[in-house]
Image (cartoon, one colour):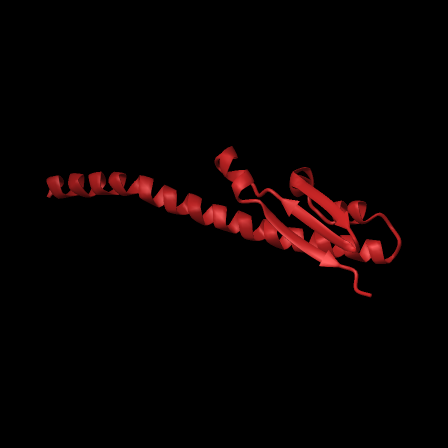
Length: 108
């Protein structure tokens, strides 16, 4: 019976890396999705500021939380506000590859 208990412990330890990898992938997917939502909200805030005659870059940046504000790039061209955000990533090289973008336009 003690041999069976030892075997189960070995199996659990063998599964641990796989469980951690699945958890890391889930975290990364959630981070990308949240960054996409934030980018859309910031683009909309920038477009509203543009329509009101205010600075659209400041409007977009003010709508973002601190971590996203540092990782965001805002571009304004011809009545369109585009916001790009790099989500947090476990590997720095992944962060650039997972960058998300959202745009909003001021209608005429």
